Length: 223
Image (cartoon, rainbow, N blue to C red):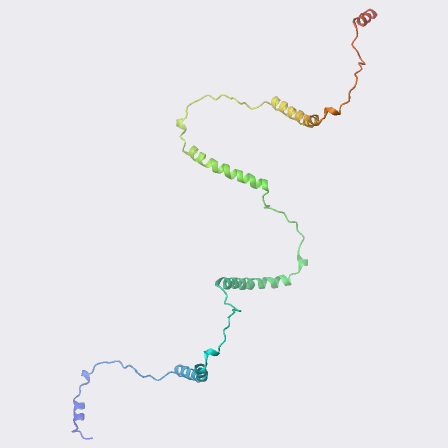
C-alpha cells in the first residue's frame, strides 16, 4: 500500500485525543436459549392450531342447536373456601390427637368422682340477680348524690322512735297467734263448707239440773 494515499495521510495525522467516549448499544443481540425454546414452542402450537383454525373458519354456525347450560360444578364462594381451609387446619390438628386416642389403653384410667364446682344457677338465683341489678341501677343516682352531699348542711334534730322493735314477749305472742290461726284455718274452712240442712232435730235432756232452794236447805241441815 502506498504511503502517498490520502487516506493513510489522514490516518497518520489523526489525533486520538479528539475522540469522545461513547457507550456501545447492541441493537440486534443474539437470542438466548430461553427465547429460542419459547419461539419453538410458539411455532409448534401455531402448527397444531392451523388445521383447527381452518375448520373453525369453515364452520357454519347455523348448524348449531340451542341448548341450556347447567352448571354442574360451580366455583366455590369465598365463604366455602374459608370453611374448607378451616376444616383442613382442624383435620391436621386432630390427626395426631386421633392417633394417640386410637393407641390409648382405657385400662390405665382410674375411677374418679366428679364434683360440680361451678353449677349452673337456678331460676331463683337468676331472679335474685335480676332484682339486685335493678336495685343497683336505682341506687346508683342516689349513691352519686350521697357522695356529693355536704354533711355541714344538716340541722341537729332529736330522734323519736315511733315504730320500736318488738320485745321478745310480743314476738312470742305473735308466734302463738300465728300457730292458733294455722290450726283454726282448716276448722274454719270446714265450717264455711258445712251445710246446716244436714242437721237433724233433737231434744235436749238436762242430766245435771241445778238444785232448788229446798234441796240447798236440806243439804245445809244435813251438814
